[in-house]
Image (cartoon, rainbow, N blue to C red; front, side, top):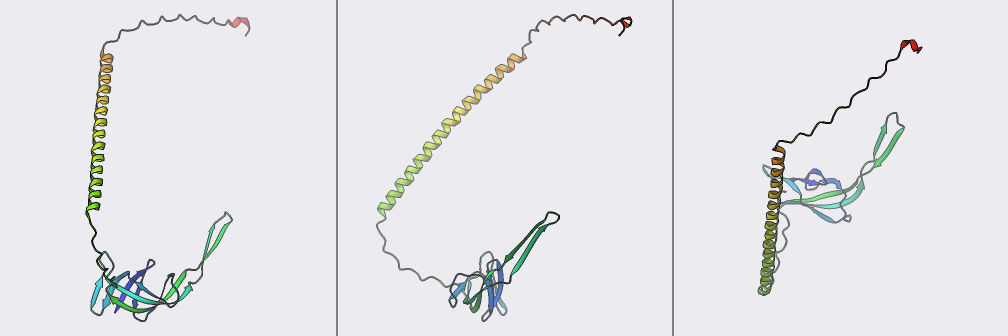
Length: 196
């Protein structure tokens, strides 16, 4: 039986006894972890594929060691600008030994039913709260209706003012008497004999 699981944005094909390196899991070495994000579960000819949600399966693994990935050098530069920058990075990894690939998640034990309390006080309090909320909604609706009426009245006043102004502009205008034109006095001509 094998499974394809997703962890840390990566997908891994695992079977019982495999060793994988995954992103760092904050648990102690030697402890057991359960990986439940299984996308596919295969067993010979039978295959369960996740459709929208993970398959009802889980993978149990033991933490063997915490490691660091290989060093990656990142060099950036801008040509002709004397800009150079070097960065280094090593990913934090956890090595897991796959112990078991199984169907079905570990279901939580059902809790014992608690004795029922008297529901009357809670129900009455809820009913009062619902009634108060309904009254508040009605009050808000009435306020909105009043505001809408005021807005309609204001719009009607503005429309009347616009109509009155339009009637004033449609009436023939009395022409203003034209201002008399000023007489221009011609400039005296220069006499070429004056010597200029």
